[in-house]
Image (tube, rainbow over all chains, first blue to last red):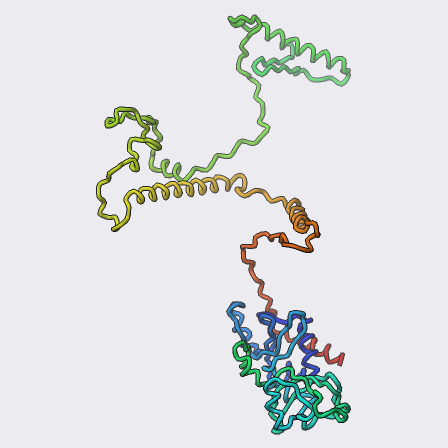
Length: 184
Length: 241
């Protein structure tokens, strides 16, 4: 476990800013003020400082997880957000997609969202914009990237892909075997 | 002898009269010639030895004290056994290497190969009650011998180490500049194939101390500095949005 370097912090915040914009500030100075970011085996964790301090006494090889997993650095150095960080993305999300009840299940199985499944989309959503996906009763289901801007959606066929699935809460069950960092 | 000191034992002579300022080089050469003359003359005054060669003479012991060029060697530290022997007053005494063997009717060495008390030479052995069932007494003897040799070797090494502690390092001296070049050439040699290391098995240069696990430096920075760093990163990112 170690601190993030400046470049790593930039990579993480740039990715998170795409989802929640200026609210990344509240992550570091909001109600949970004494939280920090730690890197352990390519994974970035959002941890309370007290826990991070306590975890320094555990050898790297023995430390599986701590705090909440934000995401991981891929082999090529990009940063990927994990589904475990959804509770922090959902309340601050800039762009949202609400699904119809019948396509909810399909999304939770890891499929992309077709136009027929989209109930509403935040206005003026650009193309290739990371969005958080909700169901009709405002429960966050996951996140993805828009394949069409909100203008293009109106002209699209009902079978066209609108949101590309990046992560959904179904993966808690699907990838149960190799899941890291579920609890805060 | 008129201002010339001659030491026949070390075959040396010296003109000890003070050198005057007005003396020329020729005068000095004259002094040398004169001193050597005294030396040669002294040699011929020595009593002749009775031998075929008439010129054979024995030199007396040298009187000149020549200073040492090298420092006096340090006293070697005692080995562990020598220390022990000193404290107990044990003295080495000479013993014969061979002794008469009554049973065989010949002289045999006391220790070592073919010695009179060679335990392993026995065909039959009295039963030892401390033996575990199935354990061979012969194997036990062999094992004991092996252990004793090993032990002795260890002691020798330890003595060598303490000996060299005060003097020269036991480890070979490391020439850093040289080892740097060796690294470089090892890397060159690793890719010196017909394909310049592109294809085929790579001869990886093994890094030194690869078996030694490096100590990982803890890179946890203080909380205040970390927060500052985080805020700075957030502000930088927000500026670019």
